[in-house]
Amino acid sequence: MKKENKKNEILAAARKIIIERGYKKTSVQEITNEVGIAKGSFYTYFKSKNELVITLILDKISKIKEKNELILKNEISLKNAFEKYSYNVARLPVEDPESFILMMRLLDCREDLEKEVREELYSLHLKRGTFVRKTLKKYKDQLDIEKDGEIERYVGMIVGLVDTYYENVVVPILNQSISLTVKETEKLVNKINIDYEVNFMKKCILKLILK
Image (cartoon, rainbow, N blue to C red; front, side, top):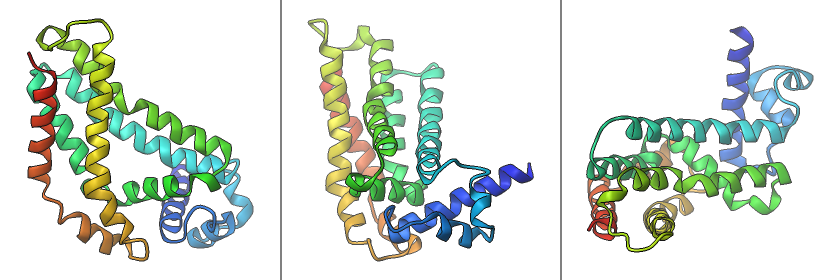
């Protein structure tokens, strides 16, 4: 338990420093200084800075996956499934701004990232449509589908809609907050009209896919 707590302290310190200074300027020495341990102790928990960053990414992916699997597990309608999906997507920057800013910082400097980390980010990119695909297949009989393969096209369109939300609503806020603290950024993100964004996203998705 003590070892797990120390590992979490290292992860929290790394998240904080990467958000403040960026991936390239974050060193193992700075992380261990923040935690108050010797540099050599870092390697008891992680083989490298790359492994630490990948752990941060996978932790966020697992939390998103858990939420989406819970939606699919419950016996709810297609409309409710995408309402909950839209809610989760729209609220992600608000519920966990620190992790979201971290992801944005890593994406912004992906050319500076090591190959392993870039591959993990790319894997995350590919998995964005997993929930949408499973939901569309589960409720296939309710969809406006004429040919095989149209589900994949719907997946691409819905993921594109989500990307548009982030590009037009969230990213501009984060771009102006590069030099701000997490708390200051959190205040900016909380200005997003979540109810409007959820309803707009849900409305667009349902108009696209329903018969």
